[in-house]
Amino acid sequence: MRKILFSLFLFIVLLVNAQTKVGGIVTDESGEPVAFANILFKNSTEGTITNDNGRFYMESEVTYDTLVVSFIGFADLEISLSSKVNYDMNIELKEATEQLKEVILIAGKQSKKNNPAIDILRKIWAKKRENGIRKFNQYAYDKYEKIEFDLNTIDSALMKKKIFKGLEFVFQDLDTSRITGKTYLPIFLNETFSQVHGDNRFKEEKEDILGNKNSGFDNNQAIIAFVADLYQDYDIYNNYLKFFDKSFTSPLSRTGIDTYNYALRDSAFIDNKWCYNIVYYPRRKNELTFKGDFWVNDSTYAIKNINLEVTKSANINWVKEIYIEQDFEVVNDSVFLLKRDYMLSDFSFQKKEKSRGVYGKRTTVYDNYRFDEEKPREFYKPDKNPLILPKL
Image (cartoon, rainbow, N blue to C red; front, side, top):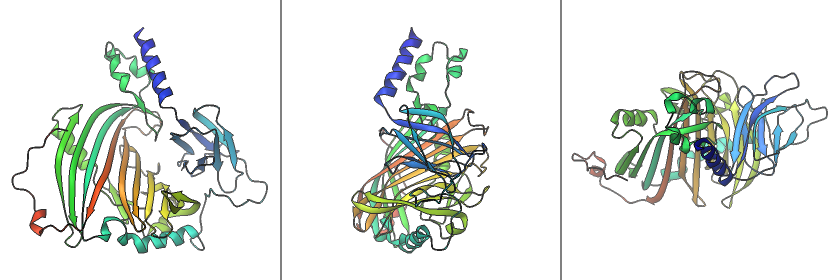
């Protein structure tokens, strides 16, 4: 009876959180995987790119009934979605038999010359020191950070193991990752609320932690220290982004044109600002690179949002997946400020697609920005007598 109620509970959860979910593999007529093919929900700006092995997964809070798949040299393919959840899709692209029309989605080897995407990229380089908090002498903001560890790839075989007999209730917190499509179970959570002050003139910054809360492993300082060391802050405008002691070339890097293919895919109004959508993916395999896309404003050339997914060919020991999203808030015509930063890592000793592992997830929300509130330089020195933190 308990299993029936649990199954019914999961079914109700899926109904309440109705979304369009798709996943599968894209191949050519000979059965070879098509890497970096474009996947898009029709009549939307929501899309992704297949990985090195031709596989993809994406989901949306909106219900869509058609998927568009595109790759240069192949005919565009529209696929009707029979339900809101469509997994294990096998999509075969056929070679184009007629001259390609101008398409919104672009993939394949991209030229460095006469490429509008690279022209836009150069303007991003020129403007990057004028965007965000760099425009001001001083800055301050509120910061909420949530770090979570989850056991992933939870299936019925695991749930039926003897070790969980009588403990089936623990699986009531099961959820599905919107990035990978895998089920997961939260096992550790750390939340922190703080205030950050900085001075660009002196390159000083101070973060005062006002509250902290741990769940799952009470007062386990070793885990908390490990998490803090694992997830360092990064700036997408930098030439290189460092994760797990390895430096990845940023898609916004000045050396990016030698590392990535860039293609202008679309343009649209976002928050009443006209923006360009640029897709990027690596020129070569086995390098520390990302794939993804970003939206950039057409006048300030500030990034509106960006996603970065580490390519499968970038071998990082026991890290199987890294995915990053950043969203920027439009304050006025010339100021775009970081609003949300999300990072997911999939840790596993095996690289197999269905092997179990642990998700490490960090979500950071930035709010209540203030500028040009000057503080004495002594303000940024570490406190000798730090306050005892209240629990959130």
